[in-house]
Image 1 (spheres, rainbow, N blue to C red):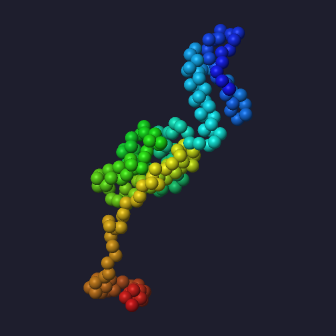
Image 2 (tube, rainbow, N blue to C red):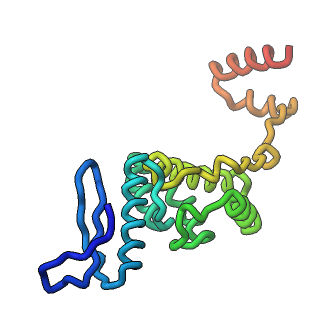
Image 3 (cartoon, rainbow, N blue to C red):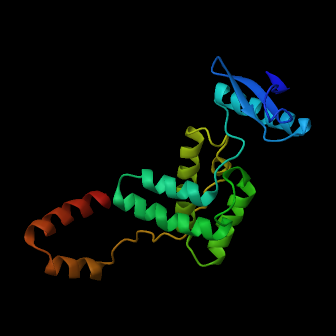
Length: 198
């Protein structure tokens, strides 16, 4: 492995690099007459060989827009894909399509949550948006494109405060339901109410 110049041809001033990949020697032209540029290219190739050998995440992670397209294409169910698409459109709007996946941090995910709340989205919607982003990042982590999913470091927002809470029926509401309900439903309601209030 190293940098060399070929002799005996017209391109004798061009520097070449040589490196091992999968047990075989590879030679490649640097396309430059500058030895330092050839050495830098050799360093890049060595790093690429090392990344492939050890299954490390790639140093150049994909852009968010490309990752979203690939992720949505891999989702088999139409309804799930539609939900993820809706959430990931909000993600793209906040982060921008050209951000690299490795540049997404837990702080930026928290900022995204707060931005969604300030736009009027409910806490549940903000949680679903972060869950869609997390599913996409988990998939890219499995593909060894990133080393860490930043969404795992971000807590969920409390949705319970916004949910409608169950309230017991008043006697008037109970009487109205019984007056219009069929006989079989009245009997089952009576049994259920009896058990619920015992």
